[in-house]
Image 1 (cartoon, one colour):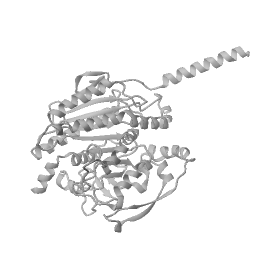
Image 2 (cartoon, rainbow, N blue to C red):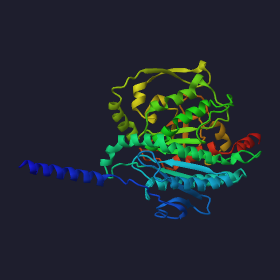
Image 3 (spheres, rainbow, N blue to C red):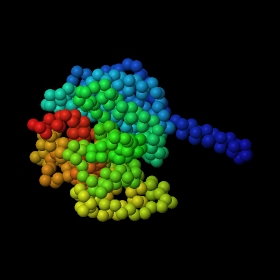
Image 4 (cartoon, rainbow, N blue to C red):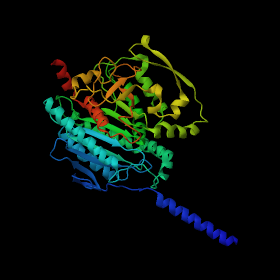
Length: 452
C-alpha cells in the first residue's frame, strides 16, 4: 500500500469520524421560536413552537407557561423570547398578585416539544393552581394566577442513547456555566416582577405575589451556581437599614432542588452560616431552600463521586471541625468532623453529615386535610412529638439544625423517589405543593389565623 493510498484512507476516516460526531450531536438551537402569540394548550402536541402558553383554561387548575432558552455558553438564544415572557408576566403581575413557579431541567432534557419534563411541569403547575384555588376560597382572599417559567438549556450534547451517558462531566461544566452567566439575570428579573406591585400600592398591604424556583439534577447545579452568592448575601444582609432581629431571607420565596448534581462542599458555607452560634429562629421564619435527594439515585450517589475522585486527587483537603445544633444556644452544640475530600467528591444529597431531614411515606392515619396554621409553626418537623404535618409524606428532622432553620437537605425514601428521574410522583408533588403553600401564603393570612 502506497503512502498516497494511506493518506487518502486517513483523510476518509477523518471525514467519516467528523461526520458521525456532528450527526451524533443533539439539537443545538431554539425550540420555542414563536414569541408573540399566547397559545391555548389542550392536549399533547399543542403549542409546540410557542414560548407563551395557557393551560386548563377556565378551571381551578388554570396556569400559564413561558419558555426561556440558553445555549452552551449561558447566553440567551433570543432575548426577544425572554422579553416576551417577562413582559407578558409583568403586565399580569402589575394588575393582580401572582404565583411564579420556575423550573430548570437537568441532564438528558431540554425545552423540546414532547420532553417529559415539560409535561410533568405542566402537571405541577396545575396542582399548585388547584391548591391555590382551594386555599384562597377557604381563607376568603383573592386567588392568585399561577405563572410557570420553564428554563431550557442543552441537557445533552450527544443524541445517541447510552453513548450520551458519557457526557456527564461535559454537561456538569455546562450547567455551572449556564448558572453563572445568563440564568442569574432571568431569576433576578422574575423576583423583580413579583415585587412590582409594592412600588405603587401606597399604603395598602404589601403584594402577596410569590416566586418559587425548582431545579432538577444538573438543573439544580444551574440554580445553585446562579444563586449561591445571592443566598449568602440575603442571609447576612449587609445593606443599610438591616433589621438584625428579623428573619433570614432567601431568594424569592422558596428554592427547591431535586436530586441536584453538585458537590456538598459548595453548600458548606451556607449551612454553617445558618448554624452560626446555634442561633434560634423566630416562629415567623419560613423555609427558603429545600434539597430533596432519593436514597437510590445512583447517578449522584455513585457516578458523580467516581468522576470527582480523579479530579480531586491533586487538590489539598483537610478535616474541618464544625458542630451540629439540636437546640438553640452553644451550650447545646454537638462537635462533628467534616472531611473536606468527602464533601468535595460527593453530592449534597449523598453527604450524610449534611443531611437535616428524612422523608418517608405517610402512616395509615395520616391527615387528609392540610392544616396550614399548624404547618406554619411546625413545617421543619423539629419536634418528634408533633408528627403528620404533611398529608402525603412524613418529614423527620435529624436534630442537626435548630427548629425552622431555613435550609433543609432531605434524604428521600425510595418508596417516594426511586432513582434519579423519579421526581414527579403524586406524594412528592403533594409535599412540594404543601411546602410551597407554606412559603407563599400571604403573611396577613397567618396573622389572622393567630388572632382567631
